[in-house]
Image (cartoon, rainbow, N blue to C red):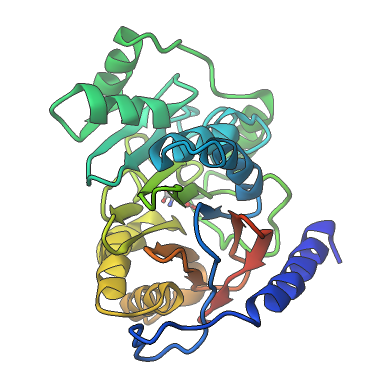
Length: 337
Ligand code: ASP
């Protein structure tokens, strides 16, 4: 058993022990889900994959100082963005089929303000550009060269994002030249070395405000100009401070088709638990792919206003990281297939 799996197993056991004492409040009427993951109070931060744990630590250092959730999620996702060994996010991300690293990111705060960049090149921290779009422009989304020019004009440095490892992998891929996204399951390596992944993060701060961030290099060897769900508000990320927030990872085209994150937040508004809402969204994706649901992977992650979290994936193998006052764990999500 790999260290990662062993760790997930241990984390699951300890979290099951922690959760055994949790209670539902009288008003919470949950239609089809009895199990809760209940955190005792705030703050809390959750994020996709095991590499989310390092990102959560970054977010936590803001949250524990009574910082704002929006600052926490930005600081958190910047950690994998800067990690050259994480080949699915930011610097070191796998390129498109033309060898160009193009990044997608978005951010959303407790007031419903949001910003996004898509298909941006040469900028190591697209999440910070997305935040600047939110704060300094009347727009929500900038793409491609326009996003790059905006970033450069606002003090971001132009950098080479293609690492020698990602270039080697791309050249190897060129020999086969087959656009075939794989399920992100058994062949994942520590640090997210797969052909697609995303860091999606949601946090609640001490004041109870919710924010989220989502950033990725998208599907490896995608067509140049392809944009996935991650920078699309409502698909890769959605925050409603009254209800909760959701984010996800996996084949972005499938997430866009069901407007995944917004759907999950609306399901939570209707009373579903985070896990039950994520499951419903995954069921829709499965229904959209009657012939070949095994060929794709999507994982969703959600947090409600009470700090309760949950996740669900199409395939086995989607993990997520949670940090709050009493847990710092990587959990394996339940799956449909
Ligand atoms: N959702 C990302 C995209 O489609 C990829 C991933 O998370 O695996 O660009």
